[in-house]
Length: 347
Image 1: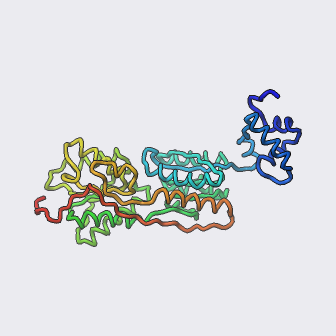
Image 2: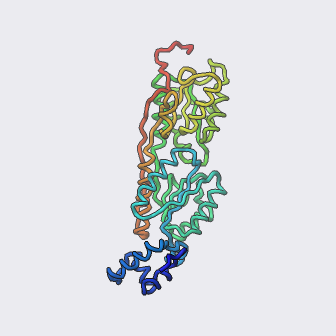
């Protein structure tokens, strides 16, 4: 028989002299199909390069083998590692990713609505604007779509993946203070990001512990991108040396990279002119010059945990663990912090 260009399930059934239901059962390892018939069908599928119509299967089964994932800033390798961890687990279960980059509330809502429309079997969200009170999240809740979130979603009881973020800010600031730094600023993340508040809280907690008076000007609302870190760093670095901070704690490594860029542009150096500590320990952190001291979080492991929690929901929708999986950070000391413990008071 001549090879068909775009064979359908009905074509395969006709070639093999069986019904469409038999072809469907053979391809999905359903019972009731003899081994001889199954092999004949599989041979025809291979010969004619038949591929199932996923849209038709979605309409039949009311669900796909797709998982919707939202992330913020695809350029940030934190999210690349997060998605890689998720994908590693999902593929073992025959599931595939549908990834959306969202930059604001409108894009976030649009992405979630699209994920719902594709009748995914679950979703994993990195909430950018904590959409818990929106109509779209109420729709997710009412439909009972399995969901895992990186951080809490207000008003929804679903499993979440989190980090001890107060500890992140605390230990990072401790590192600076213990090396003699007392004039410090914190480049805080976006207000809509729950991590930002917790890490900023850790910064203030460390100052109090070490007897350093906190002042509002020590907390700078920066954001979470390289560009925002660059902009805020320029303002700090243009201050007179005797007045400017000696160390900057950045909400994430992307902000720290922006500081590095500003330092280079002004002909200064790290750590001689400014000490910097980041958070997250993305892969690029160790490649900077000098390598960035940062608070490491196990991003790929967190992604794997998110996928495992989602699989547990999919397999048992009526009963699942809604508690948070909280991961511990770890300080990675490299070359971006100057030791001021033996410096003169004017340094």
